[in-house]
Every structure is written in structure tokens, then in C-alpha cells.
Image 1 (cartoon, rainbow, N blue to C red):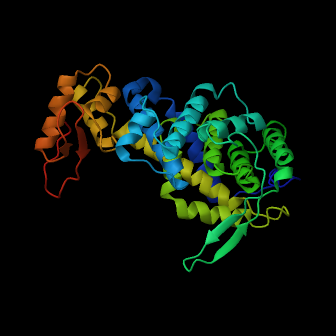
Image 2: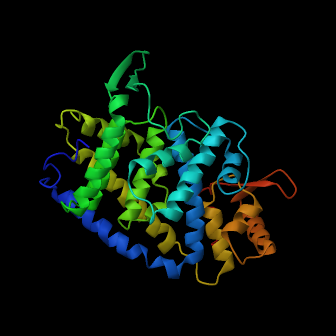
Length: 358
């Protein structure tokens, strides 16, 4: 809301580097659609990997972790959660699934935000999908144990009006003021985090809100590359730019550009990674061995043969076994356990070791 008040955004002057980033993203957005018909099998593999990585990273940023061998069954299978952490993993996957399948029908409004929160929280906590009832200050804990208040979000009684204003202002800025959609999206997420409308789970919802807004502006790269993982990998920059851009937010004196540039850089990284995975590493059309090799190169370890089969439709289990055993002889895979449910782990290749595409 504060980022949208007055004529701030309409009058924002962007640095040359920021303009270059916007142009590069517009080009990447146009190229992305070409892969739909060229590499459907690879895109399917990327979608499943992105689901797993997004559910893992977004929760891990919040300190929620699960056993590695439980991750894929929870996200891609029908495994039932055994504890609160696993419920949150499943909840985030459900929220992602809802946004991926219905983003064209849902808008950026308070009810959508509350539903995303209810899904991401696993729907099991008493306040899932409900605004906070008590203040939730942002606290920094120093190495010596000293605690410092870094930011005081909007008070609970003001949250409903603040979120309503934010959603209306966001839509108005795009429809009427013709603000660059990615700038409006970055401000939407920044203001959401400053409002901090929920007792818990605000970070998760902010990342899901980012995905939804990007979808609405034609940027669907988050379906194939985990934006959450990129945020986790750049966590120091995330918190630094968020702190810099939230300073003076309550008074409307904050600077949105540090956050905006970080936002654009994460999106740029996602498009670059997409091109690397779906383009330069695209298997030769019709090469089943190369398709299996691609899955093995990008599969989160440990994994089972069934996981590889899921990413390689129309490839027989026998063919999968042949390639995996070949990789094991080359020292690129290690088998953990025995029998049908044995797990496999990818190994780093030492210098000078032979490497075959299949």
C-alpha cells in the first residue's frame, strides 16, 4: 500500500541497468514459449523438479525441513504426512498446485491471499487463512544473544484495510497508471511483507503471491524453475535488500529500487537456468538414453527407479535399468540398499574420469 500511494511509481526513473534487465526479461519471456512444442518431455521433468525444489526451499527458509527420502513421496506421490513439518511441505505443494492450475481464474485480492495461506499452512493450524490477532515484530538475534527489533509491521486491527488497499492499488497501478507490471509486482510483494498480515507463514505466502502475479503478467518460468530455491541461494541479498527497501516504509519514505533490482535479478537467473536446462542440455529428439541421462543429471538424490520412470514417459523400466547400471559402473551412481525399493545417489565425477552422455 505505501509503495503505491501518491505518484511515486508513475514518476519512478529507472537506472540504465534496470532498464536493460527489463528488456532481457521481455526477450526471455518470448523465447520461453518456443520450448512447449520442442521439448515437452523435458518440460514435464522440469515441472516436477520445480515442485520438489520449491516446496523444500520455501519451507527450509522458514526453518522447516524433512528427511530427504521423504520429500519426493510427499510432493509428487501420495505419502501421508507424519508430523507438522511434513504437513507444511504437503500444504505448500497444494498451494503451488492450485496456483499452477487456476491462476487464470483467480485474482490478486484478500480472499486469494487468505486461501493461499490456508493451503500453505497445511490447513491444520487454528489460524490458517486468518489475519493475525497479535503484533508480530521482526526480530534479529545477534551472535551474542541480544535481540533487536528490525521492523514493526502493521498492527493487527489495521491489517484487513491495509491488504484491501494494497490489492486495489496494485490492480489500479497496472490498469490505470500503466506502471511497468514487474515494478508493480515487486512493490506488491514488498508491501505484503511489510504489512506481515499473518501470525506465521508470511514468507511462504509472499513467494506464492510472487508466482501468481508473475503468471498474470505472462512470466510462467516459476512453473519450471524454482524461484524459491533461487531466493534461498541468494538469502543474504534477499534480507539485505528487503531491509534497505523497508526502511521508512511506514512514512512512505522508503526506496523500492534495491528490492526491485533484486527481484529482477532472481527472475533473470530463473530464465537463464531454464534456457540452460531446456535448451543447451535438451536431449536429442527420440533418444531415450539421453532422456534418462537428463533425468539422472537433475534428479534430487536419493531417488528410486520409479522416480526416473515418472520423468521419462514411454521409456521401459528395462531401459532405465540399463542406463542406471551403466552409470554405476562409471562411478556416477551409487545404489543404497537392495530390492525394488532401493534408493540411488548421484556421485561427483573426479577429474579425469570418463563421462558419457548415457
